[in-house]
Image (cartoon, rainbow, N blue to C red):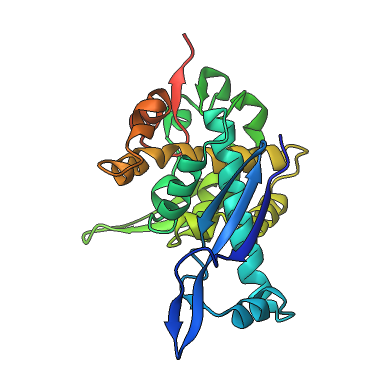
Length: 259
């Protein structure tokens, strides 16, 4: 994969916004990959900044500022990697639009996985899905916890032991955040740590990328609605097959019997 370079800059090419007679500008991200480049407006730094203030932020040694910068750079980099993996090209319009979209869509809907495996007795060889060569990730669908669940039926109390797979165990760790935040450096580090804690496998990095990729693909149905009737609507037709795959998907991991 081509090297992806992302860096914040103060977009002084735009018309300045005057505050106390001092020029202020928006912060953008310069994105370079595959011999192409584009600029994306920062979501983290969404105000107007003077040149001095911008330099203070970029050169800050404060951990809070450093994390803000690194998190947003990691988000746009991961979105670029996922876009290229799915579309097979570096489409700057797609990346720019999805980057903005990711900040307004909750990740919860895409942290589920289909129960098809359980219905088939857990035989992973009977299914195929969005994760390439799914069988190599079998360890990531194993049971990692068993908890007692109490059902109060008013006329009686029932208890059962519920087995929790690793994928189910992960969901509450990231519930309630946007895709934008889920893709940041901090949460991707947590994802790696949680995975390493529960799963001993040389495929951890591969699984995490495919996990992110599945979330990305399954969010594209909502993304198509987001760009509909905008200047980017042409992307829906251009990548019709990709959007149809997302439209047909209801959960994070999609299964179908192998014919």
